[in-house]
Image 1 (spheres, rainbow, N blue to C red):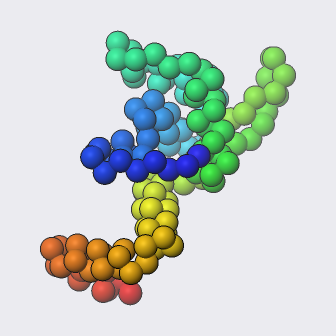
Image 2 (tube, rainbow, N blue to C red):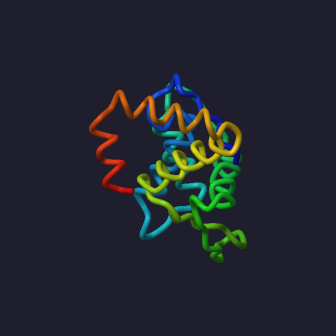
Length: 138
């Protein structure tokens, strides 16, 4: 799923819609046992009740796209109607945030290398505590 970055939004809303954020939270909260698309859909539907409705197909498509991108993983299991997927996190919330940052930075460095490095330098100049932290990491 391509990342569309909206710097005007806050937090995970910079890259995800409200139902997608809720869906990931359900998977992260049930990391050990895993969850089915039905469980995710029911939880998202309840969380967004009165605000918006979301189809189960939208949930399934999102979960599968997250699997394709390596953010989630799944196991297939037998159920009454045949087979179903149970979803598990491949990345936790912190790992996902790092994935977003890395994807955006790598894209900018690939397309605008000099300008991106200059922007990072200027930005870190306004945040000396982060500049110090970056130096310690390098």
